[in-house]
Image (cartoon, rainbow, N blue to C red; front, side):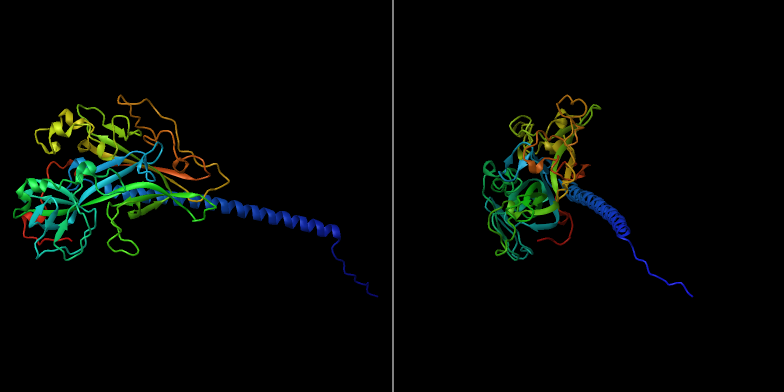
Length: 428
């Protein structure tokens, strides 16, 4: 006789033990997955902010390298310390702004006649592309023996050959990164004082402008969540087209700016100036207080009296490199521009306090009071929390680059190629 076979299941205790073991395993897998996801998100945030910082520094650096091409050295690079775009003024703790000017090598036109209100081109060689309000033009006498920087007053379309000039007096011109060109580009009165601007061989070329500053914008448009994201912005000083108007709204302001890089929380500018007698280069983090000397706020940076030395003194061949004036605080003596950017993550991570890039001053200040080793240049007491590189549950990265623009060594104005050859006149 065969023994009977009876099936036997799991007891309640065995089921409970199995369920507990399975729960522990699933919990471990879940925690591992969550940890890996957080690490991935952290690394992704680090990579993103490094990419944003590199993008910002590369874009600005490429333009700074062109600074001064065909432009007088005193107006090639203009820095605005601690610039608050909301008030269009200096405010402690805000990022810096910098404005760069250079000549457009692809634009040149002969001038038939010129006066303080209008340039007239030959009817046979009108504009082939529009000129916008705020466009800077450089008018050159034959062989560039004299020159004048002027500004276009109103939009001019292709096919036109008269260019109205902005009649704003230099003293009334704006000194701002987000508005039209300043006093250094309102030399229209020169056109009345020298007949060479209307002589055969006179030419007009275009000068490009790029102003970089930091501004914040609502990240999601929801008023219930007022978090703001900082962006590095660029303003060309031109009245850009609107949704409804090709010619623009006739006002040059922050609405004419475009974003360059996301998450740029701080932007600091420093100058490296000439030196002689084996002295170390003078490093200037543009001063935070525009009310205290020396002043480095945009076009106000002129430590050498231009009236005493005369116009365009830096073109004077008698002022040699060893001359003490070549080491004074003046834009014509600038040899490098040092840029520092801080990029932060656009989304806060509640699991971290946030990186802190506000470090104490390292080393002793130089005799002039400058501390060149400070990681954030001249950034003093932080102002707005939107631009304070500390805490806030954000990841951050800092990048710095010193840029040499060979064009700042220019010692005379020069005519475009068409002056000296049979090359056809080109450009707009």
